Length: 429
Ligand code: PGU
Image 1: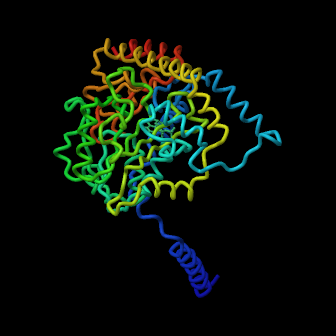
Image 2 (image 1 turned 60 degrees about the vertical axis):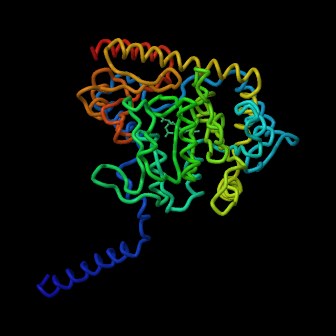
Image 3 (image 1 turned 180 degrees about the vertical axis):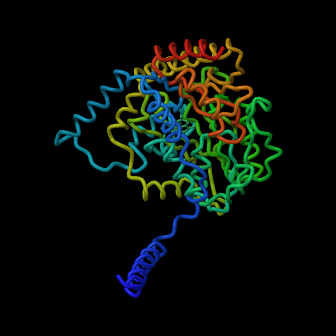
């Protein structure tokens, strides 16, 4: 090939590359909010590390005390209701298609009476496919100028969904997002934020019993929160996904036990943790009639508009299962399931305390929050995985104030919990 031909080939190739580049330039722009996120979602990241560890150590018998996912089989009464519901769908008379987007009226009313002691009405309860999707959808209620406050540490969905929906600034050099009010909740402040210091928040995400710290707020603490919200015209999004784990009868199981809460709070809850519906999927959100926006319109009406537009109702089979879970037999089985996991929590907590660790939670919550002195969270996570082959969750994954902590989940078969405890005693002395 002579020099001229070579040059022509070069030009043709360059044009091809330019054409490709042009194609790339012409692609749709990435959502700038997605680009603000710093890493993947916490739990898949943990799973990735676990898989890599297993590739290096194929014979390791890993015990997972990481993600809070239930392990015990569904109880008989609930299982029967689910299978009966499925069988009915296979008959001419029993088949049903789309249901009400808000859920079965009977279930909404049963949630109102059995869980809320009729402090809320069925009309205020919206049944859904789980608390996590509701947390994401709730973000649509508020504009992107709403000032959002979060507990630090917190369930990562609150911050990540705020970022995705453009309610935060950029990630800053403090490893946090601008325009978010972080409320440190640490052993030093009894895991309850100093509300005097936070300025004006429009939306406050608050989780009790808390994931990850296991702290369950007292009536007095929640009253302070409600009073703050009233004074500042804020709305509290109260995540009560672990409310059934509250043993202590003096502790509030719902924000609606607090005077004035119906004017300032929305509550999210779930059937995942009390009856093992993490895979079946079912949750609900309570939006009280008293809750209004500044123009006097009802928040409940906007929530209804959102749910009827982008949600098509929860599974009819799951809802029948939940109805069974809320009758006397179902409630008894629910208590047994919860007690089983709480006993696991006690076994783990006792072992960690005997080894000299400072632990929190685990009495009214399935999580034990443990300070690992002298180590950062990911280092402690790797240490636990390498030495004891136990997967935990690094505290830093829940926020800056979680650095230096590990979260132990008590969801697991008893024999695995006992084995985990043996390993802790052997390897972490
Ligand atoms: N709210 C809180 C506070 C949670 O901890 C979880 C689950 C949910 C809601 C989810 O409820 P669903 O009704 O099942 O949607 N947290 C677990 C699982 C991780 C995850 O990504 O949800 C955990 O390990 O923190």
